[in-house]
Structures are given as structure tokens and as C-alpha cells.
Length: 138
Image (cartoon, rainbow, N blue to C red; front, side):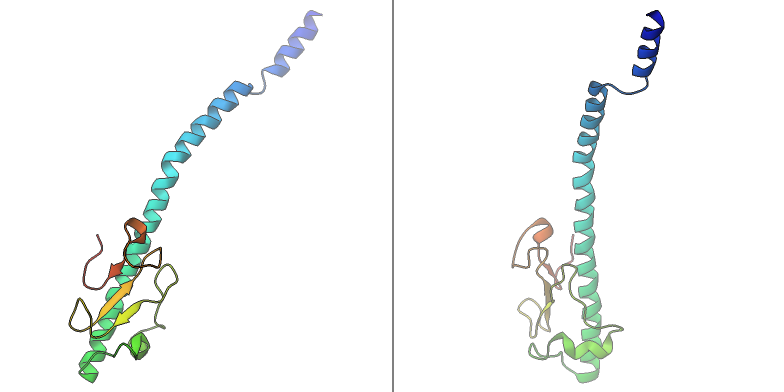
């Protein structure tokens, strides 16, 4: 009988108790709750910085167009007019939407370039904020 208890005790000590497993799950949950939002916040910030960089690149191509043609493309001609000044096709913003191009611009004399951000609607804050050519993203 004593040998049976030793075998049972030895087998039982090989695994974790339910309480131990639950404590580990709670700790993992707490870590995930703090780390995951920070990670996704960095992804959103990177997308906004990418939009700003693309707007600057498109602005450089627009300036080259202006040097050659002595004017910016009209709003009707749009960004397609500067395709020959880009290495690739006119990019979409990081959220997959077309950039808005207006010439003459409302904020600038020459042109305005706008990405409507994550919500694809005017205005917004945080990840939904508009990225525009006349202001640096911060």
C-alpha cells in the first residue's frame, strides 16, 4: 500500500496544478494587455510617417513637373500627370486610398496633397488624423 502512495505521489508531481496554470494564464493575459496596444500604436504611427514620406516624394515630383512645364498639374489632370517623374506608379496611401490632389491649393498657393488617414474621412485624431502637405506630421 505504501508503494502505491509513492507511485501516485510521484506521478502527480510531474504536472502543474490547475491553480498554477490559471496564475500563468492571468500573467500572460496582463502582459498581452499592455504590450499588444503599444505594438499596434507603433504600427499606426509608422503608417502615418509613411504617408508623410509619400506626400513629400509626390511633392518633389510635382516640383519637377513645375520646373519643366512652368505650372503644376491642374486638379483635373491630377497626380497621373507626374507619373513620368516617379520611379513607380502613383502610390496609394498606406491605408489603400488615393491621395487627394488640389491645384491651386486652399492651404498652399501651388497645390494641396492630402491623405485622409485611417478612417478615410476628413478630420479625425490619432490614427484617423489627416496627413497633409502643408504641415509636418508629428
